[in-house]
Image (tube, rainbow, N blue to C red; front, side, top):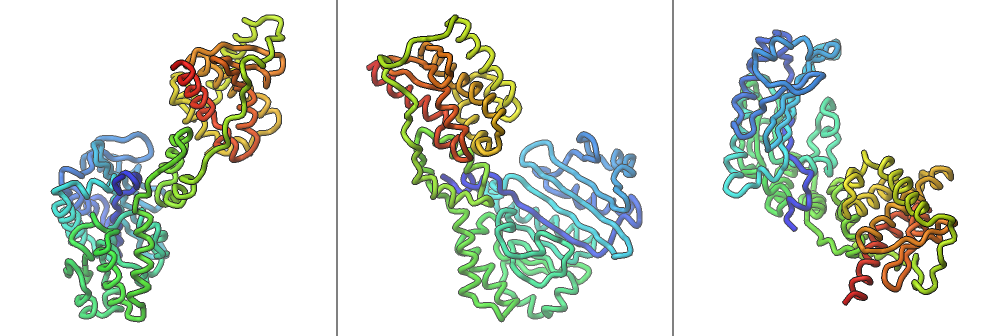
Length: 447
C-alpha cells in the first residue's frame, strides 16, 4: 500500500497571518489580495466563490456586487474554491476592533498526493512559494506555515489550533514565515543562518524559509532531520536527539501497515480504518484488528433437526419477513447506508459497519431493539434466500425461523439478536460473516 493510499484524507495547508486589514480600504484593499490569488497556477486556481448560499462563479465584478454578503458583524470573510480536481479552498477573513487587527488567509489543497505527482513536486512547490511572495507584497505578514495538515495535527504546537495566540517557536514546517516581531526576537542574523533549503527576506521585514525543496517528503528521514536541525538552531536549549526522536515517532503514523484482517469481516474493518484515518489512530487500529477473529458462527442447525413451520399461513409469514420487516430496515437505514436501497450484497458489510461504528448495540432501548431485530434478521434472511437459493422455514417464535440451504438451517433472526446485544456485537456477530460462512458451505456442498 502506498503512503497516499494509507493516508487518503491528508491535504496541504498554507496559513498566513497579517497585521493589516485590507478591508479598511474597502474593495480597493481587497483587490491586491485577489490579484495574488488570481496569480496562482491555473492548475490550482479557484473559480467559484461562496457566501451563505450555493457556490457561484467567481469574478471580481460579481464579488464586488455581493461584497455586503461577506460580512458577519464586523468580520469580513470570503471563501473561494475550485470546481475541478485538485480541490482548492481559500478562506480569507479580516476584522478590526478594539482588540486590534485580525487578518488571515488559509489555502487548503486536496489531496496531498497532488504535490507528489511524479515529475511535478518542484514546480508545484515553487508555485506555492510564489503565492506567498505575492501575498507578502500586498500584506505585511506576521506569521505563516505550509505543511501536511495531518502532520500539523499530530504535532504539539498549540498555535496551529489557535492562530491568534502569541508564538514561541514549537516546531518547524516545510514552509515557514516569521514576521518582524519574531525575527527580532530570534535575531535576524541568527535566523538567516538557520540551515534551510531556501531562506529569503520578504517585504515589510518578514522572512520566508523552507526546510526542504518540496513538501512532498515531509515525513521522510531527510525531512525530519532538516526540521529538527532548524528547530534546534532556533532554540539551542533543545536537544537534537530528542527532537528527532519525536518527529520520527510521528512519521511512523504515515508508514502503511498491511491490513491482514479476517477475510469474513475485512471490508467492515477497512471502512473503520479509512474512517479513522491517520489522525484517528489508524495504525494502532490496524495492528489491533489484524489479530482479531470473530467467534465462529453458531446460529445454525443441521437441516434434519430444524423444526417444521408452526405458523397458520407459511406464505403470509414469509411475505411479512421479506415485505414488512426487511423493508422496515431499508426505511430505517436508507440515508445512513444507501446501499440497502439497492439490495446488493455490499449492503451487508456497510450495514454491519454502520451498526458497529454508530454504537447501535449500546444505544437501543428495549422497544427499539424489538423493532430492529426482526428488521435486521429478515434483511439478512432475504440475502440467504435470494443469493444462496435458501428457503424460509417460518416459526411463531422468530428466533427459531430458519433459512435452509443444503444440509444446514441458518437462523438469521437469532443472529440479529446477537448482533444487537452490546457495543461490539455488530462486529462479533456480523451479518457479513454469517452470509459468507453459509456461502462457503453451500459451495463446498455443491462441489
